[in-house]
Image (cartoon, rainbow, N blue to C red; front, top):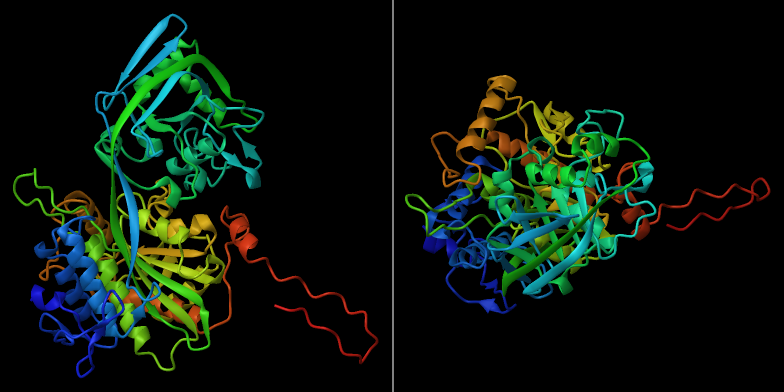
Length: 580
């Protein structure tokens, strides 16, 4: 079945497909993956057939840079071609994503000097530090430490933790999450909901924009939404990144985390109390506090350049082909852990074979739609999501369609096979006008939109749509609903907890025909089809809602249409209409 699935396919009765190099592929073709014939409609059987292939052991967990990547991207290419799409990157189905693998020396230590007191922070136990500079060696020498509260500069909220502060050459120390979080003040920022400014990636980028030599985030379980073990396991060992020249985001020479205990000891040695300063940092008008301490570090890393690939399939628009709606899903997962015993293949059936299956089903439905959509639709399967949204970040830096001509983005990541639900989770609910279209689609299904269950964790910033959002393109990200038609919210909670405990990022995330209920996924995809169809066949340009931090970037690339000028002509005389 796998061998058949990996061969290039077209619809039954059609000729050869276009290969990755743009030439005709003369291999024998068939309209099936294994023994499955696909329907033009979105169906549970089609979703199951795609997931079985993508999450099979033969694909080895779809690890970037592995043999599993070759099978995965070739399979997606073959399915795009079978469906009738065109290569989405000029004459190619692929976009090569250069990546840099950086592995820090685990013997690295961070040395702090606070007056006559010396503190040595061990890698893994007390701190984690890494570099995004691409350099094999980066050093700090007596860099002054300064506490900058939450490290936030949010002009639209009248908040700037860096006001009147020059941090060039300094090491900034900051808290995780948003102002107000730790003191439970619902009047600050968005209350319990994490904003863009609470996300650790944004804090590091802001420090880099300010010219800091290094930045350290103080970890706490509640503020980060995960324990220190997650920090240690996630940011030790090989770290993948785009090459500095391929990514416009600002980068620090050194960035990292320190434990709560290490921070408490540092502040105590400096004659300060971290608990008191945390409360002060949650009040408007907070001023940075020098710690009268210096940091030194010699960070040596092994760096290796590698590549991976995005897969792009295009359905050209019939009348506005230069404007595009983007559907996306990440194809990568965690690969095979050869050093582990037992089942060491991380198949990623839910995360994210379901998303790729959904992408293919949507492509099939649109390719069979008549008349053809007016705007182009780009189906984008990206790599390296699990390594920090790198494939989507690279696409945004090197887009096929200019971002100003990209109408909106719909991201599909980890749909849950738990049955039909009365609701649909909109992650980051309230962000953009794309939700208006989704609400209309859900109303036709007798469903409703709801927030994610844990708004404190910042899930909106953890999947590939975020790469587009940062650049200003309105992006919609949904999760399967939890108020199940059979069993209600109680059954939904049990299913979600079971997945989190036993399958999420574990070898147990496998396709199970005995327990999977795919009718809910079908309904979710139908709603997302409706959103994309409205965009692809309309003339609207959805925007972010007022107050959203991404709105300024969208307004800069697509200035709002000016209000019509007041009429000054005589009654009955023709007036000039403003140009679009």
